Length: 505
Image (tube, rainbow, N blue to C red; front, top):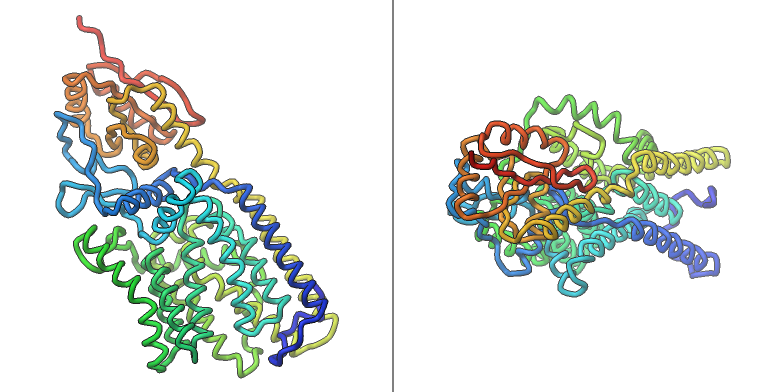
């Protein structure tokens, strides 16, 4: 990257020349290399609550239904009833007879569509991979749309693409990167669509998909309002593009949850007492997960007056998401919970680069430019260093064991077995047809009734426990006089158990 080209590009068009074509070639090669690195680390499989939830939701959508019947055990009526039969990612529906998925349908719609073409094995890998690439490409496009030079726009794409939190959620079945992609697409299209009804309609469609991916992406309506202002024509076009998605959103919610605007999330746990802890968490970890380059935000006061509207857009865009999630109960708990801010990450990165570009324009000498170039390179190095430290590209590998556990049970447990589990429950629902009972919902009395039902119908009883669940399972076993749990196998750190009935005296 030539440091002399870091300043904003002139607004007048220039004819393509050989250096410009070569620059395009290098950009394409960089994107191909990035695509290969991501593709070689993709592990988008059904695993814990989130990843299995998206997969199970996709399976439901592929069958054209929003509810599914539980798989009960004959003769067993637990005290928590449907909750005891609800795998992770599901909950009892309003009719108390069926189960509904709790996750938004945006990402599952893409997975279900891909599965019809390439099958379930690779569907999520392809969908998540394409979204991760789209995020980087859109970031470059956003930089150019908002007036950054090509090298600065490339720096923005590189800072996002190497962000530890971005990479962490680019290789597993999660909706965070997709949430960023569709919000960013809506913002970029809206900026281009201030005086174009076609782009405004595209912005509406992208915004609708963003809300389908994550309902709280409705917060993006605030920066979109900054862009469109009081231009009625733009709002009409925006609405027309978003109407199909809005209709689907409401009708699905009505069918699944009984109300047009009710989602599977239910009530969101927000409270004022989390704000202080989360703000401290932002100060410590935002420069880590979105790179130290965001210190460039301090230079925003030097941005040209004709770019001030862009600055306010970035400030409002980021503040909407940061303020809302500051009150969310788990945002402050660990670095990767800053994934909730990914839809606003482009604002903080682009804002910082806009400030840096203003400094270059204000002090146009080689020393300043070289210093800034070195700073951007160091910021990229920080991203890569933290990504390696946390092994973010291996984030999805843990989900592979959920498939292995399910395969172990399919190979060794009879088809009519009952499986007691919790963490494994969502993946077990996707991979198998076993009747399963939630470990965390069982009381000692429920367990005794389960043993009776299993004995009466001659059904074997198995269990799959992660390390943190072993004590709960053993407590159920020791409180019963009718048998004991015997270790039947181990898959990585997951213990498989079989219930051994005590011999009759």
